[in-house]
Each structure stands twice: as structure tokens, then as C-alpha cells.
Length: 250
Ligand SMILES: Nc1ncnc2c1ncn2[C@@H]1O[C@H](COP(=O)(O)OP(=O)(O)OP(=O)(O)O)[C@@H](O)[C@H]1O
Image (cartoon, rainbow, N blue to C red; front, side, top):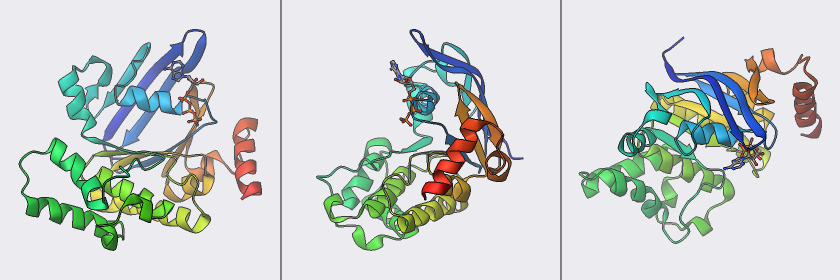
């Protein structure tokens, strides 16, 4: 196995009487695609927020790229966040900006010494990577849902993150477009050597993109392993029903 980029141990988080995370242990390895599954409200977003320092755990450790997140000062936290790319569910493009402007925005804001030529080369290179070079001057309103997701991924990649967080990457897309997004997630790892956490309810996406699955049950990762290890013969009723629901209803 490659080196670890995230190491989580004994992580606990409650809100008042609500115990959301009750002892999470999890590793993410370099160049790994790790899928995180769990029903709505199980704490997936809370986990990601602790990872990027938007929330603090009550106890336990969250080590990201060699740093304990909860101990970082604002400046160090901002530096760490630049190494993590967050691809939002709704792709988070600015509607009033063209694709080019959307992609320029994080670059100009975070990397000061690039020339116009370098910026254009980076944008064109990434649009090529996601298969949408022709959209450079289009507005988000002119793009399909799948195209917006691809541009969202390209925009996240522009700062060359070491870790990618994909939040429900296939939600709301038709099966063919879902397949294209799954291929893109795998291609991003291949081309950019990223380590990724993919949060999804879609088991086809999980199977196609994930090296390992981690299922959040009652605040802990009850089951971690390859798709074949975790799903087809699951004994835990909750995991089994997740599997049956996805494959019977798809
Ligand atoms: N800041 C907060 N204050 C109080 N409760 C919170 C806060 N953030 C999250 N929670 C609660 O923690 C629980 C887990 O929420 P979380 O958003 O992590 O779920 P999730 O697994 O991401 O769900 P979904 O799949 O619907 O996005 C929920 O019951 C939620 O109401």
C-alpha cells in the first residue's frame, strides 16, 4: 500500500444529545479512491467538515497530509485547504461568469504570479481533460447537468489538489451521464495522482470508482473493504438493504 494521506482515529462528534460520530477510524491512501456511504443524516458531511476544519471534533484525531487539523491556526488551515479540492453536489459554478471566468477565479485569487498565457494554458488543458474544450466561452445556463459537473471538477482541479472530495457526484444525472462522471473520477486519479473520497448513495458509482467502500453505521465505519467484500453477501441487515434497494430499483 502507498503512504497515508488521511488518518482518522477514534473521532467523536456530538451536537447536544445527538451523537453523530462515535469513534471513527479511517485511512485514505495516496492515489486511492475511497467511497463513503451512509444513509442521510449518518454524519458524512460532519466528517468532511472536520477534515477541512469547518467543525472541530470532541475527541480523537484527524490527520490530513501530515497535519492534525484541529490544532492548525487560520493561516495553516487555509494552506491545507488549498491542497484539498471540494467538488460540490451542485457543481457550484457562478452563473454570471463564463466557463473561462469560473475557472480563472480560484487561480487569480490563490496564485498571484501567473501570466495570462499560463492561466489560459491551464484552463484549456483542464477543459481538454474533462472533454469540454468547446465550452470555454459559454455560460453555465447553456450547459447540461453533466457538463456542469465536469466543469465543476475541472475548476476544482485547477489548483492541483492532492485530495479530491466528491460530494454526490452522480446525483440527479441519467445513467449514461453517471457513467461518464464515474469514468472522469477514475481518469482524474490517473492523470493527476489524486487521492479521493467519494460520498455517494449510488452503488453503481461506488462500484465503478471505489477501491474500497466504507459504510458509516451508527457513527462508525462498521464495514470497510472492496465492493465485493462489503456488499453482495453482507450479513448486516442495514448494508444488505442498501444493496438490495440500489440494485432492485435501478
Ligand atoms: N452544526 C450542526 N449543529 C447541529 N446539528 C448538526 C450540525 N451539523 C450536522 N448536524 C446533525 O448531524 C447529523 C449528521 O448530519 P450530516 O449533514 O453529516 O449528514 P449526512 O450523512 O451528510 O446526510 P446527507 O446524506 O443527507 O447529506 C444530522 O442529524 C444533522 O442534523
